[in-house]
Length: 390
Ligand SMILES: Cc1cc2nc3c(=O)[nH]c(=O)nc-3n(C[C@H](O)[C@H](O)[C@H](O)COP(=O)(O)OP(=O)(O)OC[C@H]3O[C@@H](n4cnc5c(N)ncnc54)[C@H](O)[C@@H]3O)c2cc1C
Image (cartoon, rainbow, N blue to C red):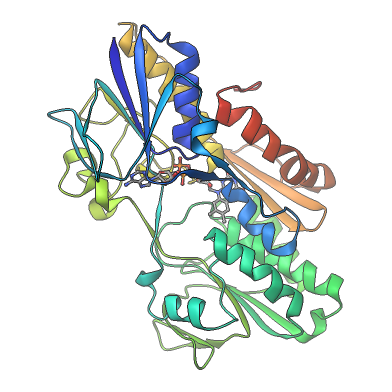
């Protein structure tokens, strides 16, 4: 009987655990999942909740999401010793493993942007919508907003779902038009890069849409500080932007708590990303360790769409390894980003390591798929380890 430990029960961890449970009998493997939280959130809802396009009930109890023969331990992982094959937990007994899957996602750190925490907690104008609570609170702020500058900024760190700030910006522009206040609102989004979206041909199509709709993009803008009293964001080069309603994307990092002092992340950015082979998802040094999703260093877009594809690869490769068979499954870098351009319209950017897959076309069907269909597919199929079109 082998022991499999899975760290994190988000998109990547929950799906991998349930896929593995379907592949391996209970007399073949014990599967234990650890997560510091009791709830799993559907994070792609965080740019829809502010506008009322999805209702606030967007989480599930992790214990209920996992199959009955998967053990769930609610605790924080504080260390991994890959030589001894031991996971150290904050309060519970340490876990020994034969195979380890790391899926601990991204760490949001609002304190990494000076002034952000005060601006969020002490004013009614700042909503870092990557946090569920802020997405929820932003709904009322949007309803009450009658005019001024609506600002969205991005941090200098890598972020999950790089399309999310663009979607929020376009949905806000459309929302203000429907509300009849568009003429009284300036809409600005910043990014510390030359372009607002990395992948072509979606980028050019987005520039077209933004030009048509008068949405401003400030390129190469690095946020250095928020001044909540003045309602101003300062850039690293001394520029400043006044805001009346502000939706910053929180700075994001790997999970230092589990990679600190561990050889798992040697050589990756900040030493916080688990280093894996970008196709097999296997660790580059320890063959019994795999990682997927936002916590590793493969050069894919950090999305649930990517984690879903990787969950298939990891569960197949771990199963093969356990059974002494060759590992054949390969992840091709697939990611998908439904770019919601306004209420009822979306363009899906789908791409892999080799380049774009889908056409840059807006359609109502894309909106229906993303907003009305995908949440149920996510909860009732993917997260439970069923995938009609893997
Ligand atoms: C606003 C927003 C919009 C998004 N939109 C989209 C979209 O449209 N399409 C898309 O595909 N993706 C989207 N994403 C991204 C997507 O949600 C993530 O890429 C995906 O959830 C990554 O899965 P994961 O398993 O790597 O991490 P997560 O799903 O974040 O799960 C990580 C888990 O690890 C746990 N954990 C972390 N540290 C520890 C620890 N030390 N000990 C124990 N447990 C720990 C956490 O509690 C969490 O449950 C969006 C995200 C946001 C925030």
